[in-house]
Image (tube, rainbow, N blue to C red):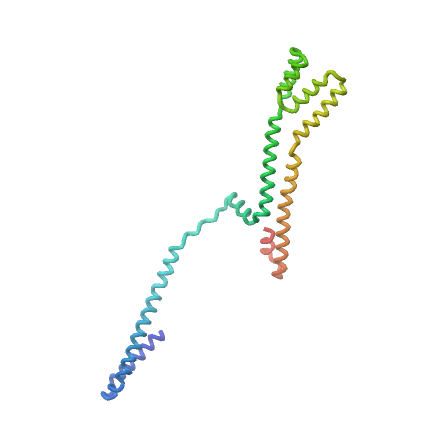
Length: 233
C-alpha cells in the first residue's frame, strides 16, 4: 500500500509539472524522465508482489495435496509386542528372548520324552504274566526288553534279580527306579532356572525405569504423574 501511495504522489507531481510554464518544462525534462522511470519500476515491483500473493495460497494447497496420507497406527497384539521389544533395547531384550527360546526348547524336549516314556502298565502286566506262564522267566524278560519306557526297564531289573532274596529284589527296584526318575527329571532344573530368571529380568527393567523416573523428577523439580509413568513404562 505504501508503494501505491508513492505512485499516486509521483503521478500528481507529473500532473503539476504539466501545468507549469514552458520554460520550466524545458529545464525539468530530465527530472520528469527519471521520475517516470522510477514510477515504472515501482509499478512492475508492485505487480510482481500482487502476483506472488495471489499464487501463494494455490502453491500451499498444491503442497498439501502432494503430502502422503498418514497411515493408521497398527494396534494389533503382535505390533505392540514388536514396539515394546524395540523400545527395550537389543541387549536387555536379547536376554529375555534367549530365556524364552531356551525355556521353550527344554519344555518341548521334556514333553516329547515323557510322551515317549509313557507305558500302558495294564497291558505290560498282562504280557509279562502271559510270558511267565508260556515262556518262563526269559520270555518275560524278552517282553520287558521289547517294551519301551521306565516301567518296563524296572520290571526287567526285578525279573533279572528274581533268583535272589526279596530284599535284594526290592533294593534293585528302588535303585533302578531312582535312575529312571533322574532320566525323567533331566533338564527340569534348567527349566526352573529360566522360570526364575525371566521374571527377575522383568523386575529389573521396572526397577531401572523407576530409578530413571526419580532422576527425571529430581531434574524437573516437581512431582508429575507423566514423568513417573514415562519412566516406569
